[in-house]
Amino acid sequence: MFLKQFVNEGLGNSSYLLGSLETGEAAVIDPQRDVDIYVKEARKAGLRIQYALETHLHADFVSGSRELAAATGASIGVSAQAHVAFPHIPLKEGDRLELGEVTLEVLATPGHSPEHISFLVYERGKKKPSAVFSGGALTVGGIARTDLLGHEHAVPLARQAYHTLHDKILKLSSSVQVYPTHGGGSYCVATQTEKRITSIGQERRNNRLLKATSAGQFVKLAMEGLPAYPTYFKWMRPINQKGPPVLGHLPELVSLLPPDAKQKMEHGALVIDVRTILDFARGHIPGAYNIVLRDAFSSWLGWVVPPKHPLVFVTAVRQSREEIVRQCIRIGYDDLAGYLEGGMLAWRASGYPIATSGLTTPEAVSEKIASKKEVTVLDVREEEEWRDGHVPNAIHIPLGELESRISEIPRTCPVSVTCSHGVRASTGVSMLQRHGFQEVENIVGGYHQKVWK
Image (cartoon, rainbow, N blue to C red):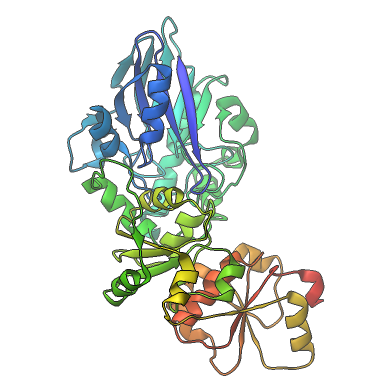
């Protein structure tokens, strides 16, 4: 049996290539949209991808199943309860898919979503499964959250998750390996851990939700500690149910000379500046969002940038344009207008306007406050971070809520924005500037408790 895990660190998800080295047949489970990674790996291993399989309708990324089917001729397997609007094999409990000496058996596992299924792995000659691809039905240390379809569904789905675990998954042998889709870094889970793979035995011992002695207690535990989730989650499930557009290949960002970029902006394109916070502060296109290119780029893009706008990117010389494309298409931001050829040097040389923003330190802002100088401190961290400690009298608005709560920030004095390091704060600074705030600075280094005591 061949098995390879593909970890998307930014979205906190795993997908899997499973195959038979005997017959060369393979399946990909919960593929992301840039499917060339699976095609390349399958070719390297001498495998033919026969199936693209989904454990559920994803809320945090665009499914790559249609893309993979178009690239390889694979059949798409989706829960019959998902009611998807594209050609597929409607899977229900007990259905089996043969991959040479490996058999996948469908197990209905509702909870994270109502249509959720898992895949049991049977190896030839064995009567009991050796592994389960659990999607979000069981994750390392928890389960995937049940509130993504709306709060009115959260408790009923959590009760379903309880019965899924106790009536089905926990009846598997302790030695059964568990391969979840959601993991550390995913907003679909509350429990954050670096471990991506577990076993039934390990979860019996360590999973806090499995310590619950009743369905009611389980539901209460499952509802605790759920983080806020990105805005784009709201439209992922409908896209995956309808069937995302097939791209056919990994798009390339085209180069745009400054006049071309400016023209696209005048026709509604948004500028995404992916450079460092220092580069952005020194000079940027007025109205640009600063979302630094890193593993979490796609999450913050989907959290703060409205969809259905063409995007023009400002990059530094060594930043990967391919990485920008991959992260964008994974969450359905497909209208990629291009990148600014020559960067800000070319923009400046063309005589177009430049905006700047301030950079400061926790110590400098602390001194301003001590000397009673007028300053508003805006903390854009998440609720849990805020509870662990914050600047006295600061305004707390998580970055993902800033656009809708901008009116809560006074315009009568300078605004100093803080987060844990400065990257999210720089995004906050760029959003304030888009709304006409003039005196805005980023507290580089973020919140240091000792400075404010």
